[in-house]
Structure formats: C-alpha cells, structure tokens
Amino acid sequence: MATHGRRLLLSLGIAAVVGALGATWMAMRSAGAASCTIATITWDGGAGTTSWEDATNWNPDRLPTTTDHVCIPSGAPGTFVSVNASETVLSVEGQKQVRIPGSLEVTSTTQTSALKSLKLSGTLTGAGSRTVAGTFIWSSGTIAGPGTTTVAAGATLAVTNAFCFCHYLDGTTLQNNGTASMAVDTYILFYNGATLANAGSFDLADNARM
Image 1 (tube, one colour):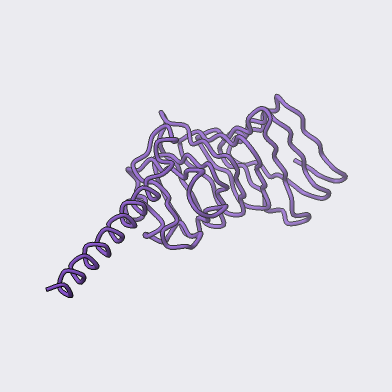
Image 2 (cartoon, rainbow, N blue to C red):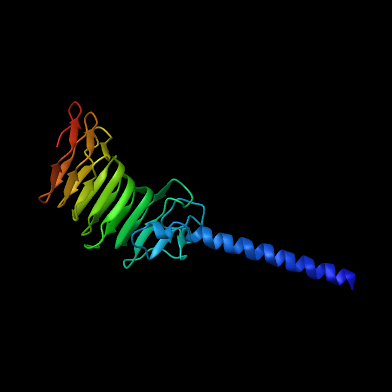
C-alpha cells in the first residue's frame, strides 16, 4: 500500500509539473498580443524559425489570411520575421523587424500598418497605409500603392545596393518625415504617377538619382 501511495503521489507530482509547464507555455504564446492595437493572429515563434510561412510560428497555429490583422509583438522569440512568399493581410503591426524578400500586401484602409523596422528586397504593396517608425533598409524591390508608405519623424530610410536599377515606386507615395539617404550610384525609378514627398532630410550620395 505504501508503494502504491508513493506511485500515486509521484503521478500527481508529474501531472502538476506538466500542467504548470503547459500553462506557462500558453501564457508565453499569448504574451505581447495585448501590446498591439488590433490583432486577430499573433506571431509567437513556436516553430523556432523566422518564416512567416510556418504555421506553427503563429497563434493560433495557421497562416495569416486576407481577413487578419497581424501582430508581431516585441516579446516574441527572435529578432525578425521573414515574408518569403506572396502574402495578403488586412494590416501588420510589427514590433520586430519585418523582412520582405517575397511580397506583402496590406489592404485595410482604416488600420495603418505600423512597423518598427523594415528590410525590403521584394514587394510591399496594397491599399493600406504603412508607417515605419525605426529603421527602413531598402536594398531592392517595389513599393506600390495606392497606400502611402511613411518614414516617421525620427526614423531612417537607407536606399542601398549600387547600380542595381532595382528600386521602384509604382503608383504610390513615399513620404519621408525622418532621415533618408541614398548610397553612391543608387537609383529610384518612378512609375504610374508615383511620388516621393520629403518633409525631413534626404541625402543623395555621389551619382544617386531619382
């Protein structure tokens, strides 16, 4: 009987530990969601990768869809999230760096997509407005509209990658309220009535052209 009692206590102890770990994990997965203005799906890094296209990186465990407001909270694992394919959502609030080698479309005209940091080498497009509050590195790719992309006051925009002829503004407005720079021999090409509005500072290095 004593042995059975010890086994029962051990089983109860294990169950308590497992229950506590499960509760802690669920709390970690939910952490940070409240810090976003609006969210229907939240990045939790559960897969241990940086890929947007890995469903287990999200809470709930599915990929964001065209009806989602996406939250990438500061408390989630990792330093950046990478959009590698073609994705469409209502809006994104990113408190970590969002890297776009693929394509990201934001469609909400009532909810601005707010990004702490952006690294663009693919396509950022859509009817939704988007604001970068920190560092924006534009190494190549397309910014398209009709939504406006704003570099906020205090933020920085760096146009990099010389001689690539691969920075495109297409039917959109790029609004600079911060500090922007174009590296030597970089080019921004304008299509379909695109404009660049500058209310901050804009430094063009030698042979940088628009």
